[in-house]
Image (spheres, rainbow over the protein chains, first blue to last red):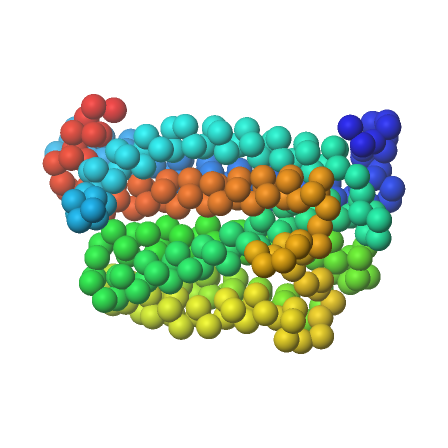
Length: 55
Length: 245
């Protein structure tokens, strides 16, 4: 590992806020991007299942 | 070969193959994403000029690269959709647009965050950033244009034409740092000649670019499956699939 202490990992020589916020933003967008279609697919299947039962 | 293309146009076949691919590709991609994060954040030395802020590169560059490549995928699907009126191409085009838009958003936001300590500003109206902003509007335009049409075949045609016309922007983005005086640094990785980047920094970057390509593939396939099941909800294969579930 490059950094010597946990404090240095967060602080990153004064650039910590920038680096960590960039990674945090990227991660949240990726999670939404991956999770959303899975949730939509599950919802569609559930809706169709109830429709077929009635029909 | 032709048989493969024929199968590609078959919704039940595509749905099940895409599902099988996603089952292993999504976990592998997310695992490699974490590996790439750790590598870029903790195990590389800081840049001698930019210090630690350069670590943003490991998310910024892959997002931008795949956002650009993804536009070609969308435009190609749009072209097939206009010329042969192929349903699967229309679904692919619509599945690509939101993924590309989100990747462009990542590139723009992380670029802004990187710009603050490096250039002293969150945003500058120079050639690279402005042409990337136009890319975001093109992606959003394709989504909105399709939704705006009552008649969906007209909507997909219009969105396809916009996607095709927008390809003009892509070489402009690539070349913007060479054609105009720009704050944005020129490309560090080139296919011809040596790359202006240390190999200890290059390998994690290449890993992250691969991860983002894989993420793009996963999200497009997953979006296509949602569209397929909605569009084909009256067909028998969807019915058996739902009842088996």
